[in-house]
Length: 326
Image (cartoon, rainbow, N blue to C red):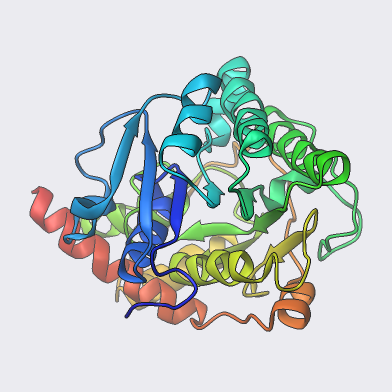
């Protein structure tokens, strides 16, 4: 499974034990890369510990806010590729604790970029932004030329991090690219306040899944394995296609309301339970979805999974995981 581009490359991944990071790290290890991750908290249930790949990973203990640690890590491990994924990623947490979110998501990003700027070995940096960085736009779907105008704490943190990444290319010519993905889903997401894992858990417990909003919010739902392929595809082409400073939307370009999504999960799981709709959503954008035309055209990228295929694989993962937990 060794990949010529990644074999023996020294790669640093922040958020390596997180949802996206765990999948990305495993794939890079299997491709032959030398992977170093930044670990703030030990999460024993992380998907990264399923399988043997984690035994080959270098672990640096610390926080994004520790600039000197980041600088030392890039130097000592002779890093040439950075995937900056780590963030405080929960909208509700951001609303309750904006300062912590700003420090993690904004200061953490400028620390990574500044350390990369000072490192002579860096070839490419991929920074994870979000569709939330666009804020609320009248025109849909979002494309990469639209302004970044987040209004609420999480959205603003991503708008700022995104713009800072662009600054480091425009001012210092740092070879950084930015990803803006829809809502990621798949096995291994341990944030059970998110709609997909929460719904699957509720249905397995023979309880009604709960929808906080009125069910009409429209979102992209992007399967995790497609996201990993997108990140790797982009990183491989930063230098080849001279993509520094550019952002790319990644999406399967299938939009669903929250109620349609939950009903789809219920159907796949063969359940006739009815969801409970609380109609309590606040500080969230009502309609939000992406155009991935640029990624398809420039990178030749396309997703491999339909929404039904992705949900089926996700449900299988949670059935096994929650059975083991019980």
